[in-house]
Every structure is written in C-alpha cells, then in structure tokens.
Length: 133
Image 1 (cartoon, rainbow, N blue to C red):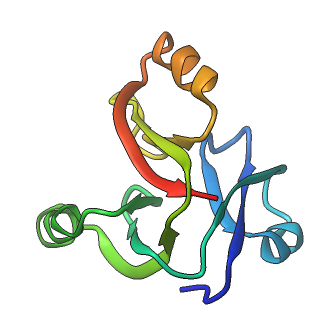
Image 2 (cartoon, rainbow, N blue to C red; image 1 turned 90 degrees about the vertical axis):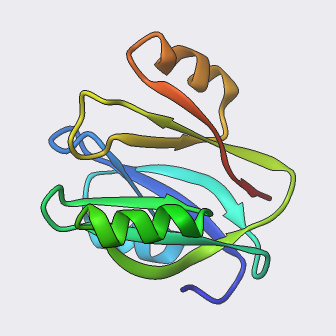
C-alpha cells in the first residue's frame, strides 16, 4: 500500500487493452504503454480499496468489497495483494465490466460521459467502485 495521498495515473497500451493504476512518479518511469495522465487522487486514509491479481488472466482487479476479495481469492484463482489505496472524497469512480474480455475486463473511470459511451460498446455498468478526491 502506498502510504501517502496519491495521484493515481493510468497507462495503457494498444497491445494489451487495459489500464494500470499506479502513483505518478512510478508511472512515468516504467516505460510500459502510453501515459494517459492522472485518473484521480486517492486520500491518505479512508476505506481500503483492495488489489487482486490473477496470474492466469494476467489481470489486476480493484474492489472495496471484502466479500468479493474472499470469493475471488478462494474460488477463482485470484491472489490478494492487500490494500492498494483508500477511497474517500466526493468524486465517483465508476466500475464497468465487459464479459467478452478475459483480461482487462473491468474499467474504472470518473468520466460520466465515458460511462455512457462504453456502455454502447458492450460494457456493463456495475456502479460506483469507490470515491476519489
């Protein structure tokens, strides 16, 4: 878990159609994909957002829901990676799912227009994932 207030950034790649969320200083140095800028800012304390990894799918998943963490890690091959950051603030981070993708099947965004547009392209809205600043 990164222990300070974070500006979480997205980096994407054309070859792997997914985003990675990471602190600003790290993102600019990894050399992976295309830097897309700051996605949202996470507070230094609040409700934990958990990160999981599936080595078969080569995918990360983020959730506030401890039950979801338990089910994914005990029944579906996901590995718990602990607290990624904290939820808090007034900006809604939305979560969408695409059943046609095996990796990168969840998408997270603050942009309500993006939520509307990607739903016309097969993404299913799952609600507010967490809050940012």
